[in-house]
Length: 481
Image 1: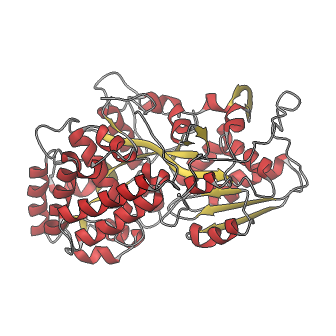
Image 2: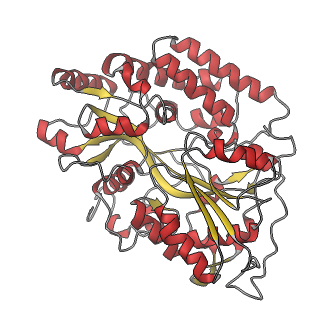
Image 3: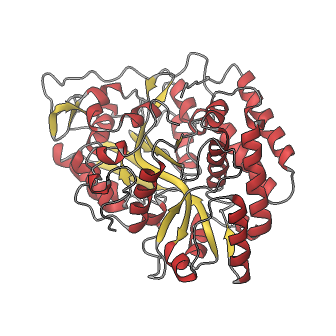
């Protein structure tokens, strides 16, 4: 089952230059190496006028004398791609310009006071556990609309508009109330990750049903290995994603769309309840509560040590752990096992979407420069440099051409090909109603810690969703697919 606007079979791989991975039906890979706002919705400041007709090399009329401030989330992707690729490209275009660069894992703590004080940076990578409520910022006029960016000539190929050089799903997923507000820069595959070398050594095959999943858990337990773990501190939302995507497998993508649209009792749907129930059993019987006290890096180190088999996250994982990964570990992706024989999506369905959010501060000192910086990021040269530095795919067509990709990313590409039209949609309420998203994963940790029942969890999160829906001060978003 597919939906308009979602990334479908092979389409994405062709657009981002992974044509070497595309084969005929059933052929797989040919080769593999490797955040409350008002009811009016977003009120972004008027976008800088485009001067593309006069000067396609400077479509936003950037004042070369103005400095630029860039804040980058230093999570799994680090920030070398900004300091070694994108920022030098910007300063080359505007000789003598000064860029103030800040890398941080605490985006919200650092920037919320500045936005309140009217001291916004020009470019923000709004990611990680402290990501700000971008919907609220947009409603307050703090986020620059990006339509002029998408309509500007592409850097390096002025015969094309920027929008024609990226996968359309990225533009769609960056909208708030129909307006282009954020840049979702990377393509990610979210599912379960495991050590292919360990499975080969033990002669294990990937479980396709939850009964097979639990049976494998019993085999692993006999060897002192847990079946599953997630980080309860930094990165606990990985588990929430996990349960949402499993719900989509059970009940179809409508299960997530209804949650995004604040449909009555969407959090108590049969599909989501079945997902939460299944994963609660897995964590209770086949994991260790000590992981609730660990952050993502600590948990991922234990994964590399084969302390547990499956870890729920996205395809940025491999690049994040490159320096720590031993030769005995090879990342590979595993689809979610089927919960029931009546699941609407078959085994093999995986989540493919866009992420790693960037926006331009509308009230920063240089919003024109901010737009130009994003245009640099969206150039083929800038995007390829990002892929080389992070080993993550971008939304830019051809950005992976000539890049030696690691096994995990090749595995993800192969899994997407095998999934065909069975692509799990992205849950958008994370960006629309961050208060709800944060509340849900906090309650989830209580559930997994054994201090709440599944029904109590569903009741609490549904009540929070109801409160958001009733709150007239919060801008409501909707989606059809």
